[in-house]
Structure formats: C-alpha cells, structure tokens
Picture 1 (spheres, rainbow, N blue to C red):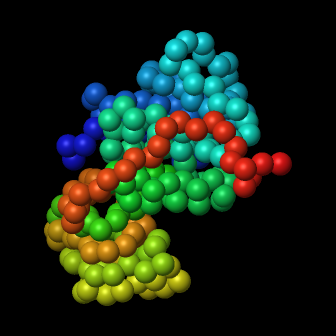
Picture 2: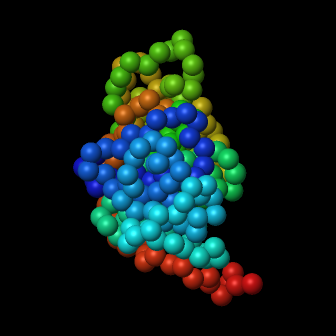
Length: 245
C-alpha cells in the first residue's frame, strides 16, 4: 500500500507477536506502549498519553506530549490524530486488542472512524488483524492456505458497523455473498474461510464493515469507491460539557 504508514504501540496485550515497523514509518508510543517500544529496542518518534499505564519513566523532550487524565479523547485517538496530522493514512496498531473489553471495543470503533475519513487502521492481536472499510473493497492476494491446519489461520469474518451496509459482496471465500445488505445486528458474516491459491475480496458499496483476518496474510489492497473528505480533528485535551463532572 502506498499510503504513509504510522505504527502505534498501545498498552494492551501483545500475545507474543513481534511488531514489524516498515522502513520510513512514523512510530508513536501511546502511554504504556512506551514500555513495549523500549523492550523491543524501537525508537518512538512521539510519545503521548496521560501515562497512567506506563511503568517506566516518562521521557522529557519536545516529542513527548503529556495529556491530562480527564479528557474526551482516549490516548489511542490522540495518537491517531498526531499521526494523521503528520500525513499518515495507514495505521498499524499493536497492543489495542485484548485486556479490557471496553478498550478493545473503543479500538475497533476507532478503525471505523479512520475508514470513514479515507484512512485505514489495522489492529494486531492474538494472530488476527481487525480493520474497518467504508464504501470500498478489500482485495486479498492468492496464497497457499492449509485447509487441514488451524482454522484460525484461514478465518475471515465480516460485520456491519453502520446501521446497515449495502451492496456487500464476498468473493473467493468458502461462502460467497453477492450484493447483500447487512445490518449491525446480523452476524452471518462470522467464520468464513480463505481458500487455497484463491484471491479473495470483500466489497461494500455503502456503509462500514468490520473485517477480521489472519495476521499471517499480507495486508489487503484497498480500492475506495469515492474520495473522502474531512480529518480526525486537532489534538483535544478538553472535557466536553456533556461529560463534565
């Protein structure tokens, strides 16, 4: 993919996975994610957070952005905004799945936010990747898939994130779908499978899908059906009046 890449290290579970930082990628450590970059010997371009989950020392310098503990934007959204405002549109995020279920749900919601503005986020964890796609198609390259081994290594699931997702098609998978409408209370898209030496695609003409696939897969190519506008906004450390104590 040709989009500028940002790799974010969050404070959650890593499941023994070895994060990969592409050459030239922007690296951001979000709060306790700095513990992980230090353990891995990875230099972060920016460190951001209220540092309530960091177990090591908070670095000093202009690339450290300290956030207040009470704020609307969680640390991960703040990290996404920093990356976006520096030109990144593809985000590879480690440590944002597992652990606290509310943090996991929030991370998935944020991939939808990225997709609805023309970006893409890939959440890595436990051998799987979670992403979101809006008004676009994901294309997976053909490769050898072991049909007798661990089913997780070939499993793909698709869920509607928007209230309805129209024109949904799944091609090249074990179970195919053509021009269907999914809603966010329909779960028939769970537990589909990649096939051996078959390219596959997941397409949504209007709406947002959450897609999970094995982390052993190459990242899919994204073809958007129209141009997207808007951005994630400026870094926000305030508390809205609706949430004020």
